[in-house]
Image: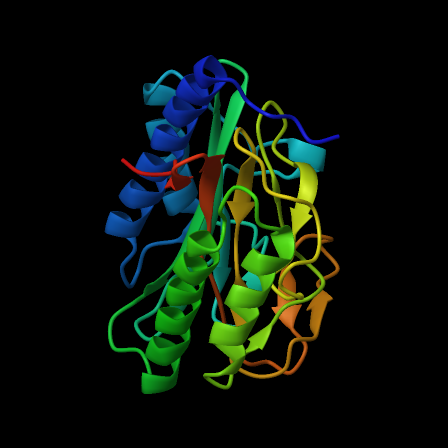
Length: 249
């Protein structure tokens, strides 16, 4: 069931999203060679708690940390560890969110560490830009497929591939709600977009082929061909005046 949010609900959700965006920002500022992913996770959790919210990933379906931190060929759901040290040349994808007064925010970004390859820079840029192409298509009266196709066309025109095993989602009083928001599809198809809908749009884009695999830890998703992967995400509200990005500081 798709839940349309009232103005009051959206105002509470905006605060959850603001905190989520702030946590992503402080992690991004702390990423540098020599820091561990476990240290970064602690920074994010401390920030979220300081804002009167709680990390919404922690203990979600058994996930053990505040943030998902995925490096290089890891697509999503990398588990932070005090033994995992970030190096110059890495690309680091961070996905996290906060729950505040019963409402959720969710966002992600990929960060370049030190001197990364030209290929990595192109992948990161295309993935971030595809997110905004998808957001532009998230207009009341349109369809989910408009968002999906805008992302897919942008990415594939640049020679990259869209992960198909994982998709964006509705969000609100639950971290994952209906509808699903794929990053591939046909314009004019799918659920109609209505004012009051809140969705997490999150392109996961691979430098090589789209196939992925999951490590034995049950969480970490890697590209099957070992190629680099990037991930960006915003929580977006559908309004009569156009899409509104909620995960902003």
